[in-house]
Image 1 (cartoon, rainbow, N blue to C red):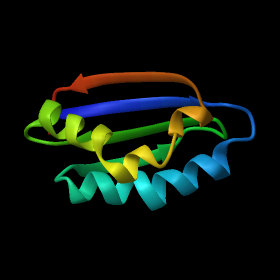
Image 2 (image 1 turned 90 degrees about the horizontal axis):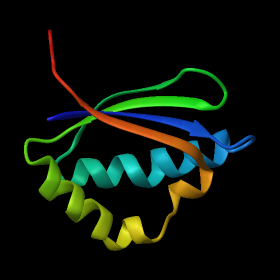
Image 3 (image 1 turned 45 degrees about the vertical axis):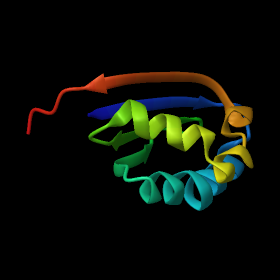
Image 4 (image 1 turned 120 degrees about the vertical axis):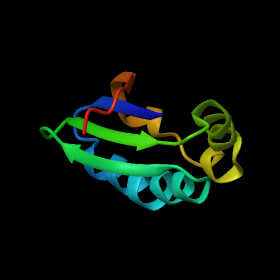
Length: 90
């Protein structure tokens, strides 16, 4: 399953969010078997990324309960969150 995640960041949060994303979120997700298919800045405050896992719900539960994930709060940087599972065409 592939999930699209789109975030609208709070004003001035880009640098702090990017640090947490690159140093904690990505390595932890990868360690739990997720594949990061791409991550993109759409603007200074708009961020889009795609993450995949065969057993998404189970892996997501493991991710959010992991001690390393508990140490950070990326929600503190986010104003809006949109998530949606997408169907691969190519």
